[in-house]
Length: 514
Image (cartoon, rainbow, N blue to C red):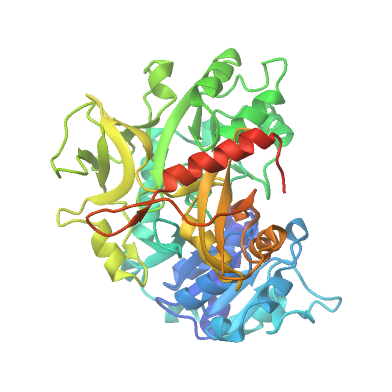
């Protein structure tokens, strides 16, 4: 969609939102795949000072209920036919009380034969077509919108992230954060119109895809937007358009390299920035060097934006394959603290990473306690990550807590456990991370209620019906009791022992799939 058309569409949607009473600070949920209309809706919410709530298309009933309920979203934009997902049916599985804040549900790019409305017998609320939703737009004047000077510090986007609590936290960023960070990324990576179009298939609902896309906007760089990743399409796009910049996960890059047997298609790339979610970065580095693809490790998180830092082009491959590097924002600072003593550490001493940047989140929306715990009096964010400082820049090594990397997303095991614990046959459960065929998955241990017989297939199906597919356990085992150890703050479950046990059992079985 051309920029001028996108701006006109955003104005039309902004007027329609205003006609429905949506105003400064209200939340609007985007449950959409990558598509041009996503941008128009996001820009429309920003124009009136509303906040776009990013919703993963893979989320299911319990996740949607939680996000809509806690965010208090007043409008939900959704697609009806992405990857065969029945979005209205998912909504029908949610208690109406969790959706009571919604004043409109709008199907994007969907309408009935008359072009008026979309109705679904499975949905408990009326689903409108975009055409019907826009009917009120002509009655609103742009003059009634907030002044642009008042919008810089306004909330713009909420991203969901998981830490050590059972529910995802809502990371709120301002309009100024998003635009300033995009400009920082553009400068740091020397992006611009001459760089050629950038291939983008990472979900816009996630901070990684969001930051890549808006940096390309800031650089006036064309975007080759895909609903879903295809390795062959990505390789063809880079080769045809002579693209110089690529951002992806490690598994995406492995698949692209598989599609380039002649080792020629990706030669135009000046850099390939990657996030390590699966496998050994050293293996990926070796393969990229064989294809003459300059690989650079990245670092980011929802709270400080993706692409917060990148490794140095002149660094040896042993350094470039690691996460971290130099912050893209010249005003950002990184320090490392000993989690036991609280003392600040020097170069090459491993500890807890803390970050201060003007592009940091405003807050965890609706959770002042979590906000105060995450941000100290000096304005540094306690990232929950482990790493160390180099003479210049820093290196990320691992997550400090028990959070799991599943499907490219950080997931709290408690989120999955709470779903399992809802079954009457389950007294308690623990979820741990495992590796299956080189990919991060999860497995569950359950303690049955007295006299109950747990059907493991039922546990898996219960998770599948309410959670994204990547959160569904690959295996479920009954256990009499969890291993524990006494501690200064009470008894602690030894999750590492459970994780080791789960991995041993899966390794003994061999190939496992749901």
